[in-house]
Image (cartoon, rainbow, N blue to C red):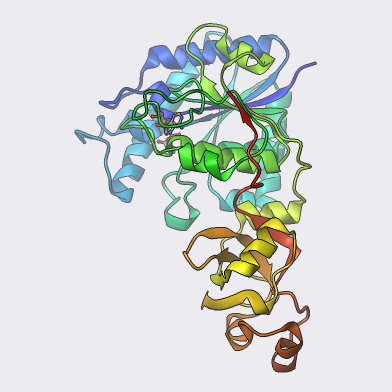
Length: 375
Ligand SMILES: Nc1ncnc2c1ncn2[C@@H]1O[C@H](COP(=O)(O)OP(=O)(O)O)[C@@H](O)[C@H]1O
Ligand SMILES: N[C@@H](CCC(=O)OP(=O)(O)O)C(=O)O
């Protein structure tokens, strides 16, 4: 039976280090997608490469660093990118559609529904939706920062059967292969571990942005959405089909997790945190490893100005982000009860629930502690 597949192609696979689009590569990927299409799969493409494709045409010698310069380069490059896809797919008589999205398009329910409906109609008509971040309007906190997370959010939105993140490496290694020559490929990941976050480094090329770290973050989003993921290389004809069939050159992330509820998905991946709560080590252990709710006694302080119902980041004393949750207290109430027993806290503040963050409204930043990788 045909599957619904999201394919993400990184800048490093489409452009050269000096900038500019490699049209040969665009045609190659288009052909791989056409082959999947022909075997009955629905394919959505999330593509990077606008900045890398556009900066030279705009007159910059190297990839610009400043946000407004990148935005300008992307505005030029996005048109070049679509022109190349347009040409590559038109030979096969497949319509391509451009969708430029930002995070609020996912966090705002009606915008997300509109995007979803549009995509469903495009797929029904046999078109290939081609998605990139809307770089002109996306800055700072609204910027995805990398298209890996964007592709995972798209995969969750359309309830894809699989997400295929294509890059210049044939998978995730036990260290950045550019710097650690004896690193070996991890074939399968069932549970994201702290170890994996440690071995995954930043971008390898001058055109790529997120590196493996952002792909692991994408894996977290997709796995928690119940979507299995592949990170690897597609360089020869048939490689994408092989990846979809389970024998690709890369790392497979499977998930036995049930997908997160819509509310937890929003809390964990779409919301904009309004402040921070800092914990002691006992509360960290209770929250991460014992599945408990967060109580006032484990809190040391709070930062920012927030209100009950807002999403806040929870960090440990070293500043490490442990996760996000919905707070039942305002920032001033937390300051008034930090370190107190629940009984004492309730004498001092008027709150709906004694838990500062209830476990049902909490999403950890890493999935589980346990490591499960096989070389
Ligand atoms: N553990 C790792 N395994 C594989 N690649 C890694 C690892 N850590 C860092 N990398 C780097 O990540 C790069 C891929 O990410 P990136 O440059 O952002 O590509 P893309 O443009 O395809 O998103 C690789 O070229 C590699 O140098
Ligand atoms: N929207 C930007 C995406 C940048 C980006 O995420 O790049 P990559 O790490 O290559 O996937 C662009 O098209 O250039």
